[in-house]
Image (tube, rainbow, N blue to C red):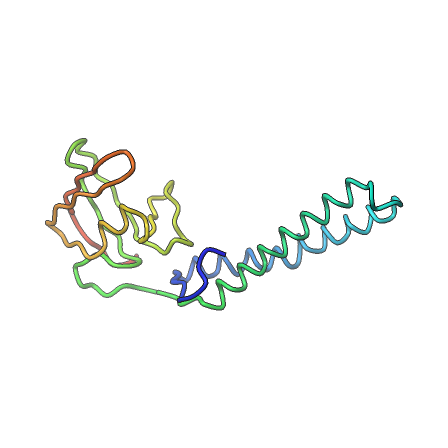
Length: 161
């Protein structure tokens, strides 16, 4: 598990996604693995039964994943919408222009559990997310990332859509 305490902030969609994943793990994946273990047991000597040991290893991994999801969901706090303060906070959309390239990007600031860089949903715990938190339209921000520094001009901050 990544964190041992504190709430996990999720959007309603992110919360539903985790609930759906947990349900699938418990109702589809778990019974499949139990069936695999049962079939492997039927092959006789378990000490040299690679199929049995592989299925048991998958079961251990699955049960760990189920426990992690249950723990995360037990700490979940749903953030439905941000207030329109003009500053970037969790669940806000922030439109920035890269000063060097001129490229305009619209990010959504999300919890680490919902981050998806391909969808421009960045974690508030990432360097870019931390750099943009609290920023407002008109701000210029310099963010240090592993590849160097990025300089953004904040074009707009929008509440969650």
